[in-house]
Structure formats: structure tokens, C-alpha cells
Length: 341
Image (cartoon, rainbow, N blue to C red; front, top):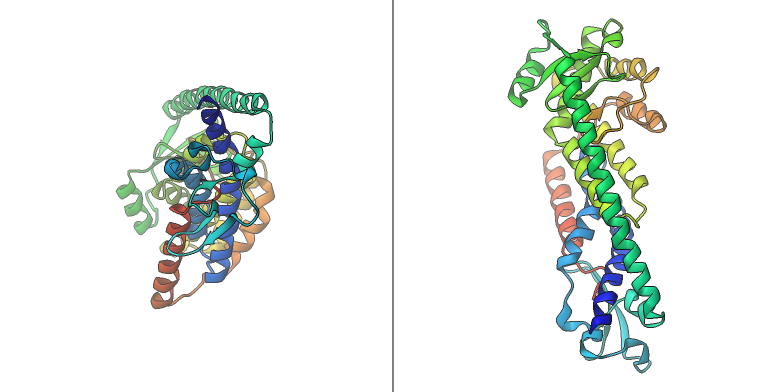
């Protein structure tokens, strides 16, 4: 029985990795099939792999686990094992036997490997997660102290001629603006939009409004909190390579926040000019507690292309059908069993 605990923990390591990448593939298939183009919808969809590996921990069906019933799937007769792929009502990819017992890829690997190696892998994974989480929390605490100090020393800015609709939205969200020399790119943190002192004189009124609209959109959609949440999940599941996917989510969040300028009648060319002016010397803020106006330079080309495009026009009827089907698809993936017993 003691070995089963180690094999279950090994299942979490292997199955979470398989589930993460399988979820990504399924999301891409559904989004391409439904022609999802809006970056905010994409950003929400791209969060699903992180949610999935957490929810999977509650979806293991131990009463059907072959090993728990003393059944060794590697010794079963040919033709008694099969791979089931289901798409209705919940998406599922699962190995099963004729008697209804289920097993996983991790079970096969564990049964074909010395138990001492499995114990070593599990021990390294657990120790790594504890160390990584501890270091992540220390960095978050340090970043919070740095941000608190920066906000105390920042100078509050009052924009008397600000776009009236934008000013009303800022009031609703409880947002204020301030300037500081501690940042080299505009960002939002703790409901404060921070502007670099040296950048203010280079920005026109409309460019300032474009930056504020962009940053308040981050706050409205809780992008900073989401970045912190999925970075913590990635830290716990540190053996899964997620950095590239996190960058993709952040790129969609940036493009989605850019699209908010159309709500206030702000020119897309003003936003593009603001991005270029900021990007000349900006390095961005690495802290997950803030959302910088200009992040990684590698994504600027795609972002500028999206900014300069004409906004897409869709009919309400088509969007209702489109997003309704997408929601059902995402729910099917989220509650489905991918590679687990």
C-alpha cells in the first residue's frame, strides 16, 4: 500500500504535464474552429491549462484505479486494455480495462521502473516545489515593499482636461495617476497608474489618455492578480515548462487592454505613438504585482500590428453563438479526465 502513495504522487507529476499540453492543443483546436479573434477572450481561454492541472487533483477516481484493486495493467492479456477518447459531455482521454478498471501512462512507467527511482523523482518534485514556492513568496514580499515605498514617494497627478468618459471610468474603478522617477515605463499597481517623470513631457494629451485607458483595463480585468495566480501555480508545478505560455497570456492581455481605447474614441495612432515613445528606453517592471505598459520587446511587432488594425465588427447573434459554444467547450475540457485514472 505504501508504494501506491508514491505511484499516485508520480501520477500527479506525469499526468499534470500531459494534461497541461493536451489542454493547450484542445484550446487551440476549439478556438480555430470557432474563429475566436478577440484577444481578451483568448487571454481567458489561455488560463485554462493552469486551472486544469489544479482541478485534476480532485478528478482522480480511486475506486476504479486498477492498482488499488491489485490489478497490474502491464500483465493484462492483449485486447483487454483500450484507450478511450470522449468528447461528450466531457472531453476525456483515459486508459481502461474490460472490467472497468482504469490506469494511466504514469502507472505503466512506475510499474516498469524501480520503485526507488520513482521515490527519488517524487521527492525531488516535492522538495523543488517547496523551495520554489518559498523563493517566490520572498520575491513577492520584497516587490510589495518596493511598490509601497514607490507609491509613498510618488507625486499625484490631476488631469483637468481628461476625456470625460475615461475620467468617469477611473472614478468608478477608484484609480488615480501619479508620477515617479522609480519606473521607466507607465504601469498600474494598487489602483495607481504610475508615469515616469521623464516621459510625461514627451506625451500628448491623447497619448496620456491612451495609456490610462490601457492600464485601467488591466485593473478592470484583474490582469495583475491573474498573473500572480498563474505564476504561483506554475511555481508549484515547476517541472512543467510554462514560461512560454505565460508570455502568450500576457501578450493577449496587452492586446486586449489596447483595444479598450475604442470605447473612449481615442485614436489608435495615439496609442501606437505612446507605445513607441515608451519602448525606446523602457525595460518594464518584472513584478507580477504590476502591469507595465510596455513589456517584452519581442511582442511589440505583433502588438503594433493589432493596434493599427481597424476594430473588428461582429453581429451580436454570431457572437452569442460563438462564445456560447466556446464556453461549453472550455467547460467540457475543464471537467473532463485527461490521462488520469
